[in-house]
Image 1 (cartoon, helix red, strand yellow):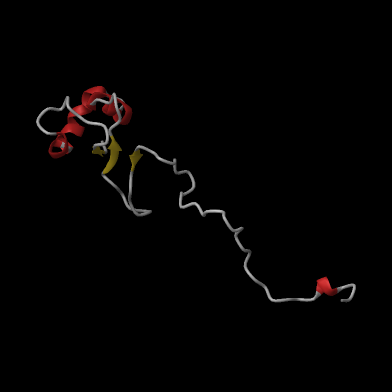
Image 2 (spheres, rainbow, N blue to C red):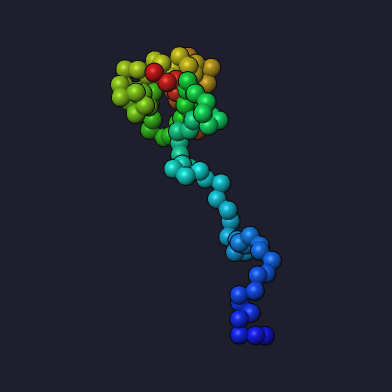
Length: 102
């Protein structure tokens, strides 16, 4: 090998990812394991979000968090009657609720 062999042009190859390193499917700015999601195509407008009920939640707490007004719980209830049932006080952890946008 000569002194200047490093100057020779070789075959260019893309950088290789180290083995054993998983690639992340998380988008920049996305929170991992978020309980609120808005799954839509980029550039599309959505009229609703979804929320997964946690222990201790109530429709008024969820409304306060999403709308800033606990009295707006009826919007959430009306959009989720089939999931919640006849009693809006009986929501269960794990239920996925539609949160209409204002």
